[in-house]
Image (cartoon, rainbow, N blue to C red; front, side, top):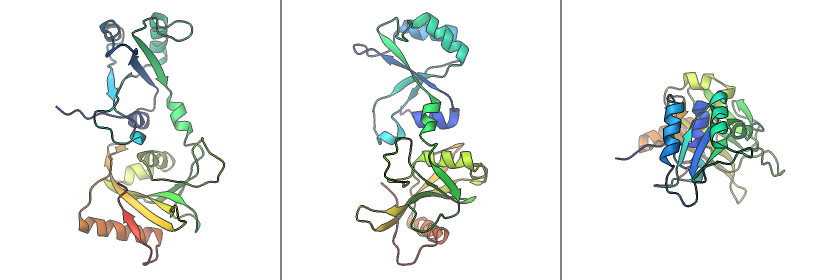
Length: 240
């Protein structure tokens, strides 16, 4: 039976807490039963979950997965006392626990400027058009290469998350479908406006929503109007 997996990004956006990954050793194909039994007995309200590949790694069918758990500070201390040495290495060579901090994931957004409406002319930016209006983002992640405040590449579902943190009305007002896109320059220096349609999935988002021809035309017209685009400027719908 097919199984729908969450991702690390979805976990961080919706749970806003650290990920503790339990990874089998190099010569092991699965986690030992002793560990699973100890976790079940010691933390009965917790349950190991399976996360799929990162949203930013591409669509990988049958790709690598992660066995993860959420733990509070008291549970982490209890776990470390039982299963780790002073250096944080597992006392059982058949597996190792790794911590993926929520704060580290969130820090990469701290340099992103976010606003409402359309920014100044000739500014490259990512944008989100929803029931609450038009919102934009521009800037670099914390791995800024010093080349300037521009946004290369396509929008991601993390853009929705970041805009909602700055403008909560986006989350409360957007009933279902919305558009996210990029207004900038292609490799030849020509202006390009392209977008994809997404839809709500609770407090998070799903992947792109396929549009029929009529829906595509209506969505493109809405984008042209919201961004104030000239008729001769081509607008692309769909990234993939």
